[in-house]
Every structure is written in C-alpha cells, then in structure tokens.
Length: 199
Image (tube, rainbow, N blue to C red):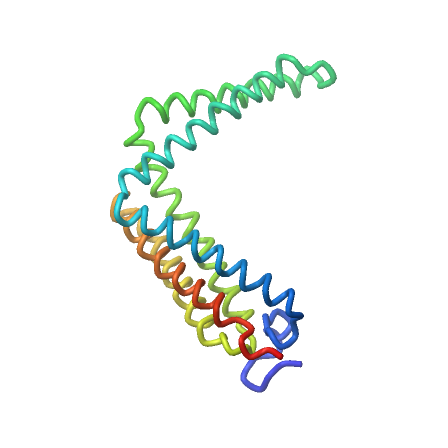
C-alpha cells in the first residue's frame, strides 16, 4: 500500500524496510556499505592522485585488451568446430583489441585523457540512473531522508559529469573523485541507518 506522501506509481518500487525480512535488510545494508566503501576509496585515490588513477586505469584497460585480443585470435585460429566466417570475425576482433592495447601502451597519457572523458560520461549516466532508482525506492523507511538526499545528489553529480568533459581530463577526474567520496559517505550512512526502525 502506498503512503499518502508517496505517489502510487512509486509504491511498487519502494524499498521499505518494514516490508523486508531481517535477512533482506542485512543484505541491503551490506550492499550499501560495500558500494559506499568502494566509492569512498576510489574517490580518495582519484581526488588526491588523479594522474596515477588515470594511468592505472589506462594500463588495466590495455592489459585487458591485450589478453582479450590474444584470446580471440587464439579462438579464431584453433577452434575446429566454429564456421570459417565466425573464426575470421574472432581473429579480426582479436587484432582490433591488440591494436587498441598497443595504442594505449604507446601513449598512456593521451589514452588516459580520452578515457577520463568517456568514464565521466558513463559514470554520469550511471549516477543519473542510480539517483532515479534511489528516489523511487526511498519508501517510508527511517533512512528515507538519506535515500532522497543520495538520489538528488546522485542526479546532480551525474548531470555535472555528463556535461563536463570540456573541463579537461584532470578536472573531470577530481570532480569524479570528490563526488565518489561524498556519495560513498552517504551510502555508508544509509547502510547504518537502513532498517533501524524495522521490527
């Protein structure tokens, strides 16, 4: 049943601790706590060491592209049960991945700048969606105020990130880091407050 303060359309999606078992409440709290802690740690790293964070991200992506590329090329060459066309596509995809890895390794700084912009756009979209979900699921629980605050903050941070690539890679990384720190703290607070009033 929807509350007088909550539109009926949102009631079906409400995350109300009163309707959850103790196990489900603990699962939600654990999820909020872990996601908040990870966001906080990554946010601190990005905020205080933006160039290192960008470099590490670029190297990890390059390693992934190289491993995936070699795997696809191997699949295309050695797989006997796959059709010739599919094997050719696997080899082509593998070569594209390997070329991407070589380009990334050859110019880490330039690749990191491009990745920062792409990451900002992706994270911006994710935060907008996460903010909408948090607002829709705010429900009538004691932590509803924190959920609404998190939802609004997430929406604002997502919109800022979505339209901020022109500010430059380093500024974008710092904004991302600060936003992650704030969102991480809010998530951790939500983890401690969610379900406190449930029987």
